[in-house]
Amino acid sequence: MAHPLKYLLILAFLAGSTLQAQKAFSIEGSLINITTKKPVEGALVQVLNSNYNAISDKKGGFKISIPHKKHITLLIKHASFDSKIKELDVNDTLNSIFVSISLTTKEILLNPVPITANNKPDTLVYSGKFSIYDFDFYEDKYILLTSENELKRSELKLADHNGKVLNTLKVPAEAGISKELFHDYMGYTNVICENAIYRIIVYENRLMIFSLNAKDFNSFVKPIIDTVNNKLIFSDYWKEYPSFNYYSFDEKNKTKSELISINNHDLLSIYNMEYYYLKPKDRLEAREIADEYKIDKKVAAALMTGFTKSLFYDPLYAPLFILKDTICIFDHYKDALFHFDKNGKKLDSVPISYNHPKNWREWKRLMLKDDIENTIYAVYAKDGHKYIKLIDHHDGKDKGKYKLQFHSGDKIKVRDGYIYYVYRPFESTQEKFLYRERITLSLKN
Image (cartoon, rainbow, N blue to C red; front, side):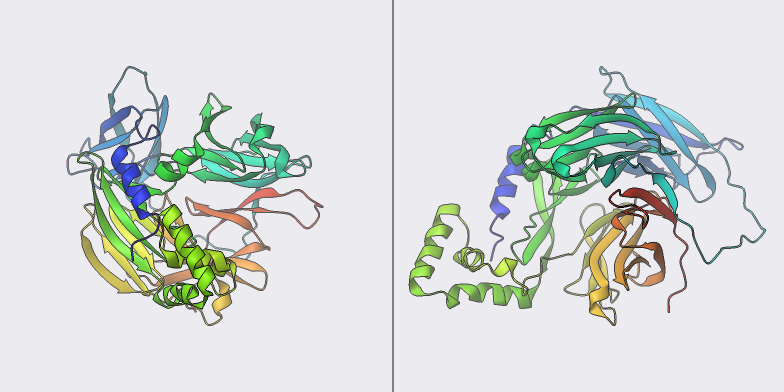
């Protein structure tokens, strides 16, 4: 059976969107060894705080196409060279820019480095005047969603890496309760509110927000997971239905192709039976609702009975990540990790079992990507502590775990080998602070 909302997304992508129709901009450049003057191949060049990146070729060249921005920060990483940050200010009239970047060979330390058993968390941002409810990264700074007491009166704050608040901006009262910060595929941070969605722009360390059309955002931006090889990778996921598909959309040719279908077959069978459990008059109502909203009658029935709100229903979770031009899909229902190349061609699949711990309650159905290190972690919980396992995106096996020092860390993210989270310290009555810990893996048991 086709996904009930699938046709809406297809029409939306073919029709185009004002949110997608931004001015295109191209970053081209070359990487060279500062000592030998030879080109550097295989370096990751990433637009910081976005999913846009490229790998340098044999001549050290790279090219990245992104929506036009006034300020761009490039991060260059290579196993044999020191990481480097390149800041670019872009004139509005330019369609492209060329940069030449020199890299310094990384020094290899031969002396052993001791690792202590207790990794003390760093308190990054804290205050007795406000709590942090969510956060996102912006270059070497943090965008914070904060409030003094409740999210009906929330504020956005920009803090530097030392925890100093650089700027504060109130979320309009008419937006209602602020729910979360959402980092979209273009690299923008958006604040999702009860009655509105705002895009956050940072200019000269000042926060600005612009109202977005919620319907357009939910149709044209939120479903897009990432980009690769001038293709948009998106899904027609709907939490009220136990089946969805991943697609690849070619922006040049305006063509769409299906990558994979994700299904929980056992749950789908139970879901579809809800229609047959209805009384005859209720079946008629389900058919009328289905005709009105152009959905399947079995979907209407499941919504009518409240099945998707019951203990028997578990929304699907099968995340997709792009790591160095390889599309990785973790299908927790087929217990398999699928690999696709940058053109959407299936390469292979390997079995996974990390999603079946001895105590099934430990698995939190959450995976995190470190965009800087290009690594994947799975999240678990035990005895009040959260912990993560490093999952090898080649063979699907876990390579070790790390436990957070504080209980009940929330809004967990990983970046550049650190785990970040929000936590209310024991001595605080209401304030939530932002912490981070260096990830030091213990060997797999």
